[in-house]
Length: 156
Image (tube, rainbow, N blue to C red; front, side, top):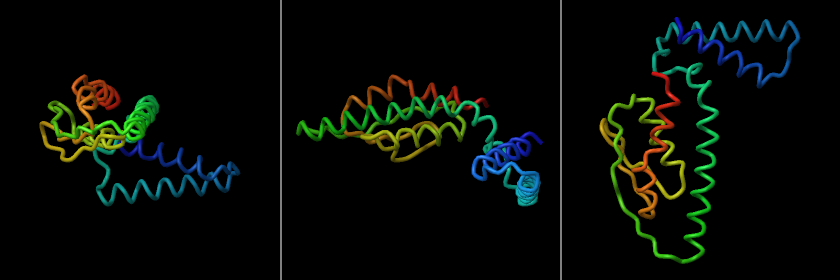
């Protein structure tokens, strides 16, 4: 029942954010649409433990802020490398994802890919294969700060 409550809360918040109307008729129509979508999701059996919108939404903004700073920092480093005409030393490595849930692995791989200069090439049960433009990016992955933050964000 918790996934359906979380889905309902997230849908209602999203509807309120997008509509911006708080008249009784609009609120009633919004509540009806949230109940209809939640009921349809239940009938289609598409709500499961991986779709934890409420659990993730409470922890995600802090991670997104940190990731945004990492993306900006990496973009500046890649731009500096391009403008300085320094030689690029691309390579492949693997970073461990042992003990991570499916949601954590996907979030980690997407975060790696969003960071300029790195790309998650493949995601396996025990590792993610990563392509990077320089060895410094591999060191950051080995340091494990991103993996720790991804694990902290997912409560399960």
